[in-house]
Image 1 (spheres, rainbow, N blue to C red):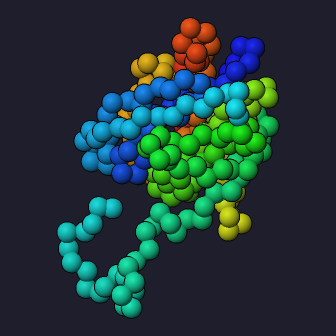
Image 2: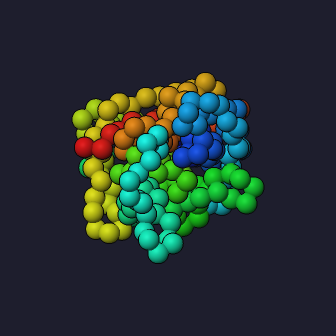
Length: 231
């Protein structure tokens, strides 16, 4: 939140469906956490996160089924996660956010893409996380500020429990999430398992930077993380 007064950095470790982890940043590159939990709770390896220059920019049943559950034409059954439409927009009335959602994945080097260029002030859904409304923690990221000034998640830390986040999806439906809590974590002690472990139902994580700007490090010292659950 550069309320510094103003260059941006967004950094967070993300646990994705299969237990992959990444970090995203605006500024110099930061590593992701060394290990992250997979669905079973075991630790798995992480991949590093990227940097962006601000100036340039069910458990299967043990009982056999009496009838086949998939189509009979040889087509594999659809992944339940893809039955939920992809997100297109995020709206957070309490803090004045109304942004189209970029769909960002991984760069060739295994780091996560972040909003940049003409899109630097847009929010982004990480397409390696669940679609909002599907089981698991969907991840939406946004810069706290940018070379243009305050960015899309500049006021994220002002959210309070009970306030709502709406994710409009490409099929015209909307997934509404209720904020449960807002936390601020030191980037050097980021609780990856707590934030990104798989969940039994649909949840949402909104992530940006927080805390003070460290001019020697070239980063904000903390992350702001919003935890929300499907209404």
